Image (cartoon, rainbow, N blue to C red; front, side, top):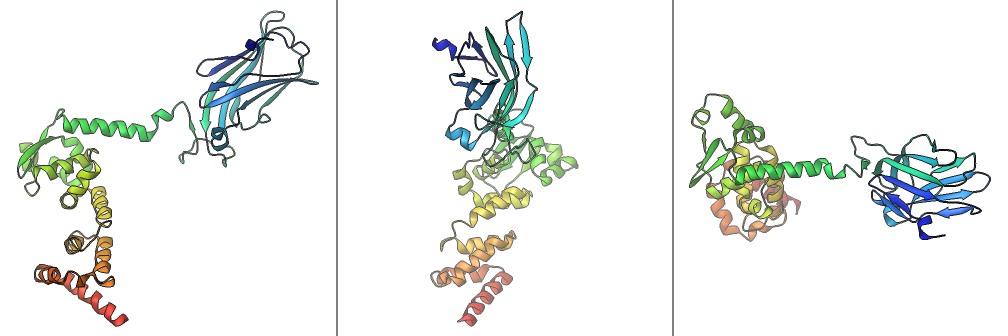
Length: 336
């Protein structure tokens, strides 16, 4: 018996095992063959009946992500002319062991024959899912369509949008910052901001002149704002211009940017910025940031570390905000 007796020929979804002669052999296992993510084996056993088994090789991948297979398997014999016996189509069957798919043929096979296996689909799922299906929850997905997941499609779309901005592809409106101008696209701005959309819908000067004046932002901050809108901002750029981005997000009602700034400003409160952030929290209605700044100043006693800066703060800050700070201080004193 040569090595060819165990070899399975494959294409992307089709596998064929050619059996020259079983003779008196009662057991034969194929070499592993790869379809999709998994290495597979076919087994032939002769007892009272002839059994054909299909299963993935045991591995970490099979244990953690057992395949869910849809396939057609048939036996093609050349005895007395080319004849085929086809098993009923298998749909979404999870295969983990050699006993998960067993086909018992009720008649013996002699001479040459081919086991023809065609995979219609292969999905992967976590091992604790018994028989998942493709749902809106995304419990399983085809290994042949994973490259086209929504995540990848969004990344490609965002990359294209970023190029539209960075390469000024068919721009149709100019954004005038305090010290320069940037070309942009009405459709993108309108889709991301209801304020911009209103400008273009009504007979405002922005619609007539094809320009928007954002004179309270530098060209660098304005570029960062547009980069965010186009999904093309990097982390350092975002951190550098957080406060400018917060003001722009509030002014142009870009709610996801405002929330991103809010969350980011919570992460690095210290004595050098707490008073400024407290003012911004009050001005832009950021409740979590206001609470954290109050706690930092009063509960943790950092107000005493910046008493000179706090004296300046109370000379210029909103009266209502100052009252809130003193109420917090009184509440802490009462607790002692």
